[in-house]
Image (cartoon, rainbow, N blue to C red; front, side):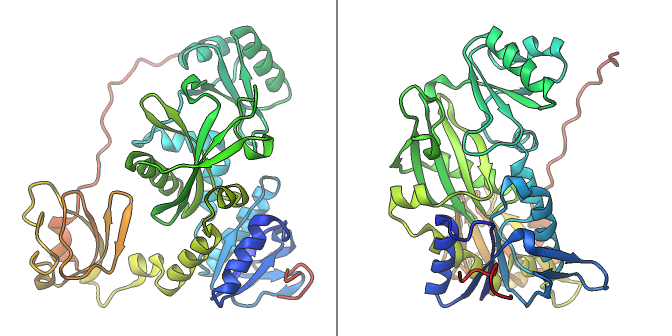
Length: 400
């Protein structure tokens, strides 16, 4: 596999580790400075130039797009997508996670816990907004910020009003969020790769600091996540459209509350805390996808118009519950099971003796007509009552 790591920090811990992990596995890996690309739209075929030269072929990219170059970085990733180069994190997924308001809006309509959050633009709406999230103390967040920058704890309503008014006077949009006191200055960072959590750590703030970021002196410890925390972490990453993500969660009284989904998670803290080769897990996942890409399976693989790919739900009470793939009669109906998703676990290429359980989701290839009655119905939007209207080995120095 020939892998391009899109990064402006070739000597950072994360970039260095990712490149080393790829080389150790026999892959070609180069670090390409995101800002040295030129997007070529002159011809019918999408193309990229790098440092003024035609870019050679790559099998996959791994975007490490910094917040300061989000716009151009997303354009570069989109161009790679147009060129059919695999990326675990799409431009849309990165954009979803980078905008704090957008990410909360997306997560809020799914079965994922989030701290009570509101956005108020007019000064007259600030006090009601604070009350809606439970009153002071509240967390005030800039819509764009990393490593705890732009996150403020306002201990009372007067301070919150003053901070919000000051930020809005500089044309900053801010989120107002409930302060989850029971988390006690701690949060959990879960590193999601593909459909599973490969590592997790608990971060604890130092002294009187309420932000637990390692860059702010926070300490770390390994933590074993229970099934609910793993489910929420994987689901949050998938909802954002990310296959490699750091999911930050608070330990609320009612369970995990997702604070943020990071599309370019740092590896130093979590690898140091866990002792795990997380960079290797990321590279292995990308390599497997290049060898058997999801895009090809879901959208391109077909023998004729009568065949295709569909997800089949094993419903409670179904005759498939308790049967094996061999005895489920799926193969007799010309249906092949490619993967089984069971909770947060993904079972690729299951054997004929694999027993099926209620709630299993089977990614199948076969006759569409045979699968039609097995595919779960699309969720319908609930109608709502109408309301009355209101008024080095880095390609920055070598040609690609």
